[in-house]
Amino acid sequence: MARHTVTLIPGDGIGVETSAAMQRVVEACGAEIDWEIAEAGAHCLETEGTPLPDSTIEAVKRNKVAIKGPITTPVGTGFRSVNVALRKTLGLYVCLRPVVSLPGAGGRYDNVDLVIVRENSEDLYAGVEFEEGSEGARKLIDLCAKEGAGTIRPDSGISVKPISVTASQDIVRYAFEYALKHGRKKVTAAHKANIMKYSDGLFLRVAREVAKEYEGRVDFDDRIIDAFCMNMVTDPSQFDVAVFPNLYGDIASDLAAGLVGGLGIAPGANIGKEYAVFEAVHGSAPNIAGQNKANPTAEILSAAMMLDHLGELEAAARIRRAVTEVYAAGECLTGDIRNLTGSDKPAASCTEFTDALLTALAK
Ligand code: ATP
Ligand code: MG
Image (cartoon, rainbow, N blue to C red):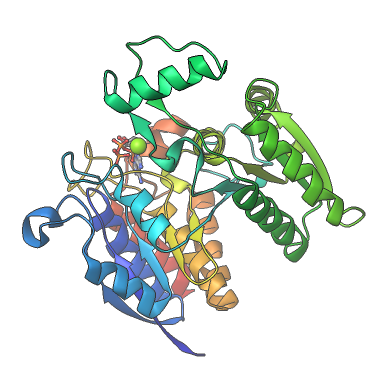
């Protein structure tokens, strides 16, 4: 088995606890990982003068693979979002979020097995905004009126939603290639092309074009995003791989996580042509940070995705088996899951839950 060096960014809030738990599990699963710790987030603003030090980006570039906890973006630092800045700098154009039922996790369904593929670089996340009353906003409002593009009230703040052919092709193609590689049958594109003809309409057109290249190998259909949400809630088993522009993908990820047991168990990855950064879907949850209450499952399952990416398939499978076993046993689960399942058994701490995983791994 090869040794791998991985950059570990513990992040803010519960990230410190979930990252420590994740490290213990990865160390026990048989993979040989050397960790290079790098800091990012609100807590390193004081020590480093920035929430995203260059040395952290360099560390990710050096090792090509990273796993990170959640990062809070402090206000007034010149970053709209450190997470978005990291994704942009590293060219991580894909956000991949598998959503799989975990029996015992309190989900609404036990037959969900789908993959969310979210575009990660543009749409309303591009950060192109004009403040209400600014010179830029005034110019844009004038331009829209002059071009006959529509009337915008003068007291509006404006966020721009760019969707390009290039990024849409890249993300849809990734979804189809993923489907082929993982034996999945269908890709669904979600959009609001009936209302936003030039942005979502373009996304849908490109998705249909790319789908033709895969005809006979992977099926394709599309849904308007509101219908997609309703369909997800009524019957998520109808979806296989679903591809989204950035914002809809963000919302659909939380919706899907909620169907199978909540943010505590939802893993993810940000993937580019050169680098990959694995991270849970959840944020820093400051309300429970530092209390040893966080559920580390999401970050641990993100580590399993990372091990797959590194070719350590057996180690990844071992982690998933241990997680499945501990949830099915139901004896040692964190408070978020106890709340969902309505169980009156005591909530396990982050550490106790991790101990239970190590016991399962040792079998
Ligand atoms: P951020 O601003 O960093 O996104 P947030 O307050 O929005 O932080 P999230 O992590 O996005 O927090 O999650 C919302 C809520 O869900 C949290 O406040 C917490 O109660 C719960 N939650 C999220 N992740 C976990 C977890 N891993 N374990 C337990 N509870 C969690
Ligand atoms: Mg949040």
